[in-house]
Image (cartoon, rainbow, N blue to C red; front, side, top):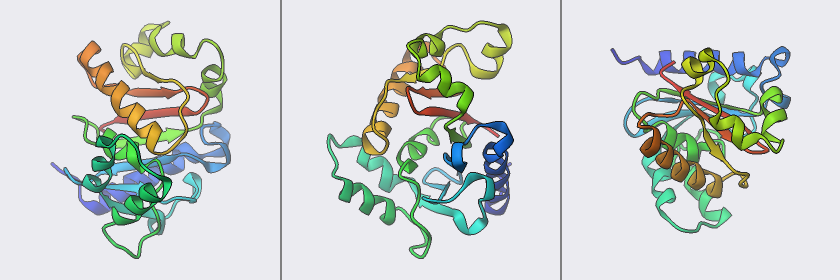
Length: 201
């Protein structure tokens, strides 16, 4: 049974607050972003400049995913074009601007079984992602529970500037991952940046 918009917003706020808790070291300075799928062409995402730990309903933006997904098919985009698309994607034009990373959230939420996406700059994970062993960490599982929780491997994204280029790289490398492993990834690791997790809840 599909959850109502109000339930999705409530779940998104709860996830955001849990990820943003300072004692967990998941979101440095409250940074990162979260999103929730509403339908085939609509999703909710944290507004640009808002804080995960204190996110409120007014900081959640409903977006049209088709406006953003169309950008991923293009070779190049200026910053001005991306900014314009982010603003144009808002269902309610009075809403705040969605996070610049709404581009990769829009894509991730099209994957089968993915209802929520969480992205943070987790300290413990970045200690590895900022090391020479980042690529190895993405594909080499050490213990069984890691496979149960994180899948057989993670998508590994070499460092790419946030925004349009990063969204395109995530799109390409996730498609390659699905083709190789015949499964949807649960975790995407971005070198020198952070972690993205995908799931039904």
